[in-house]
Length: 120
Image (cartoon, rainbow, N blue to C red):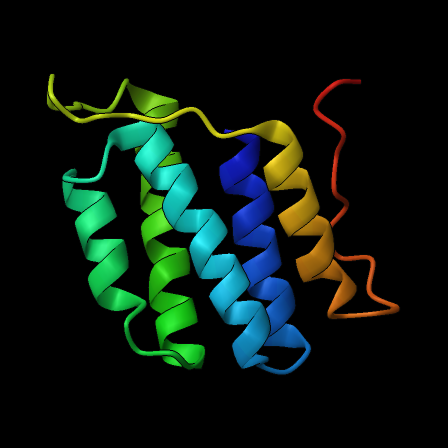
């Protein structure tokens, strides 16, 4: 769930500090890998995230953030249904941390999102 919180916070950081297309694509990549890892590639939320973030602008970012918020909310209440053949993947913590740090570096001087070390 920490991954989802980090990605939600990063989306708001991008919205609050001016939309950056490159940062959006990085965020979208990391978020999609996270959703596939949690739910599989064919889950309703994963498919809708892909569809809604196809618009590469602030509107797509806000819509994608909404999907992440819905997943986080649903997971906090009960486990999310995943098809048995979902081909779930494990998110590599190091890859995720490097991507998130790179994304946050796009917004120097901001401290709205702190990248937590998962090993600590």
